[in-house]
Amino acid sequence: MSTLKKPIVTEKATALNEKGQYSFAVERTANKVQIKKEIEALYGVTVTGISTIRTIGKLKSKSTKGGSVTGRRAHGKKAIVTVKEGDVIDFYNGI
Image 1 (tube, rainbow, N blue to C red):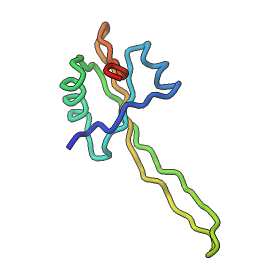
Image 2: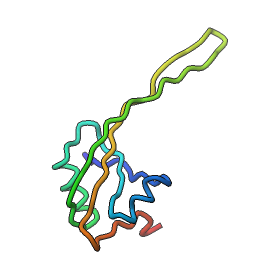
Image 3: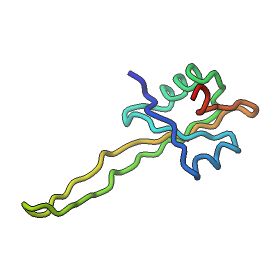
Image 4: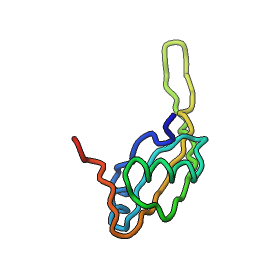
């Protein structure tokens, strides 16, 4: 099973790319060692640092004929990976 779900390509995350930092959505059970090994194997870069962030799912509610229904989106985890100076991860390669 892969620990990486997908890269995060928002404006804020893309601005970090200039500093050599890349953002990924990862499995909630993944630790920094697993994330580092997978990124180095998948993209062929040298990882110098990793920061992980646990996110809480948003509360959502909607009105239906039967009444109001409330729920919560799934919790998640993000990783911000710093690579060695000069290394680049290209998310758009092969599109």
